[in-house]
Length: 66
Image (cartoon, rainbow, N blue to C red; front, side, top):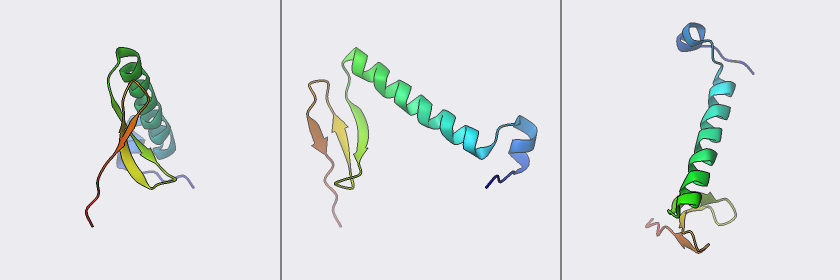
């Protein structure tokens, strides 16, 4: 389903293309952070929780108070 709005007609970028570019930018940023040895944020869909992953591979899950 292609939905166009006023911004799409002025920039020429569809919502789907913008979404793909956004996902690619996040993936690239995470790769850069991994190379530099910095932690990065992610989301575990199995546990349905956000986490921070450190360069040594350990994950620290966010504590969610409901």
